[in-house]
Amino acid sequence: MRRLLYGASSSSRANKVMWIAREAAVSFTHVQTPTPLLRADPAYLALNPKGTVPTWVEEEEDGSRFVLHESNSIVAYVAQAYGGARGLFPHGARGGAEAWQWQDYGETSVQPACSPMWWGYMRGSGYPLGPGGRLVPLDRPKLQAATAKALGVFGVLERHLSDGREYMLGETLTVADATCGVHVHRLFKMVEAHPAELGEAARQLGHVRRWYDNLRRSQHYLENVVAHA
Image 1 (cartoon, rainbow, N blue to C red):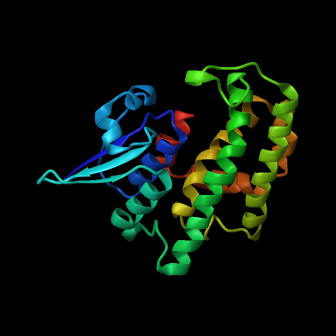
Image 2 (cartoon, helix red, strand yellow; image 1 turned 90 degrees about the vertical axis):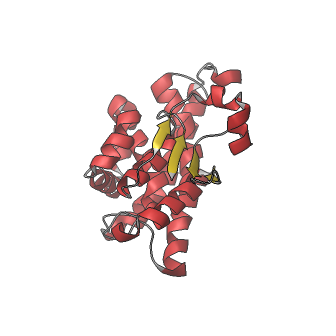
């Protein structure tokens, strides 16, 4: 079988698939074609009609293909199919649902809240971006409002982690850590770059910081998340 991951390393959604696949010790070929070129490629659109990244493809010797093109679905599949011995996907319906709710929270709450901060603090741009990903003028009041919203979103994680757990579901890394874990790195990178503006707020996220430090103990996290943002 040949496995392919489409999605440049600059994509946070590709990052989490890269990370969890490495944790699961599954081999794959990483196709880092820029997203605009993929969107213009009929062969890619035949795999993923949305033209988004990442896309995970498994090609069998008989030519048949298994294709996924939602990052959370890819992470869940890879963890279950290849990472069972490492406990990456919790056992049972309740364990799986609990993990999935934090994947959902990461995708529907954390990621949208972080994007305006990231582009504002790290790229000096407003958000959303202009046509073709063009940077747009930064609106400081909007950035401040976006920052307050994002810190509130991370405050939910702070309360969840306040019982001293090392990871989102307890003492071991699971897929529940994947999406939020990608964006917590971006948060603390912004804090490091803008301590005067963000340092005090970050000090209120001590449990989130502890969790982030736990994630950083993984070489796979360092190589597939930290190295690319």
